[in-house]
Image 1 (cartoon, helix red, strand yellow):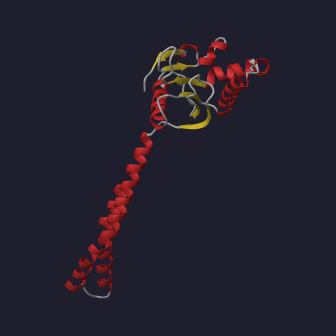
Image 2 (tube, rainbow, N blue to C red):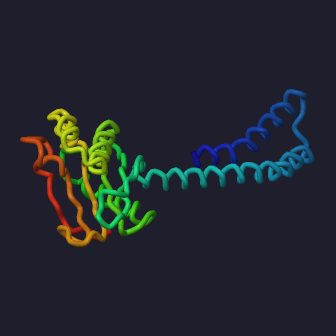
Image 3 (spheres, rainbow, N blue to C red):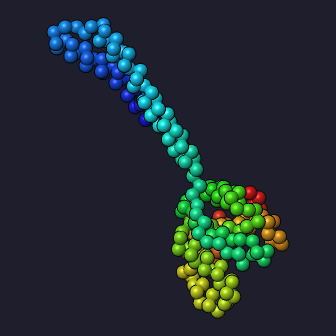
Amino acid sequence: MKSVKKLLRYAVPGIALMLLFGFALACGGEPSTEEVSKVEKEEPMEEPAVEEEEKVEEEIIEEDGNNGNAKIEYEIIYTLNHLRYDGAITYYVLIDPIDLSDDSFKEHIKEIIRKIVEEKDKKISIELFDKRSSLENGYKDGKFDEAMDLEEWKNWFTDEIINDLAIHSIATYDGELENYFYLNTLSFFTYSDYAENTAVDKYAETIEFNP
């Protein structure tokens, strides 16, 4: 876009001069020095508006570039405050679908966690899902913990829901939670323990992660 702006900036006055010159020839004479000088004197009057427009365009390009670098997309959908014994909040977060062709998505997940911890607090838990219906199932699973209705939970927790959560419940982070695996724990594909032979088994792990 900047090259187009430069073209408009430098070409338009030249075109105006050529048209005036052609008009003078058509009238049977050469353009006077006064007429040419008048055109040349009028040229700078067009530059401020074009320069201002070019500046705006550069700001837009810079802004678009910054947005382009912000590859992390997430949305906090629900919160629960009864899942942890210390009463800290658990955030249910929806992210874009991940690519399971390799484990590079794990760095993406860590960056999301860093962002949320920076915005909220270190003493929180985060449940990340890459599918909205799976997030709803995960949230409902958390609500069952509050209701303490084990029989109803068993009837609801079918193989279909288990397999769905095994693949789309991507990660769980527990920050500053004492008496756990680590003080700051990150687990990938926790529901895969309930399922058999899923595509995510090779990515399932629990690690120490301090954002």
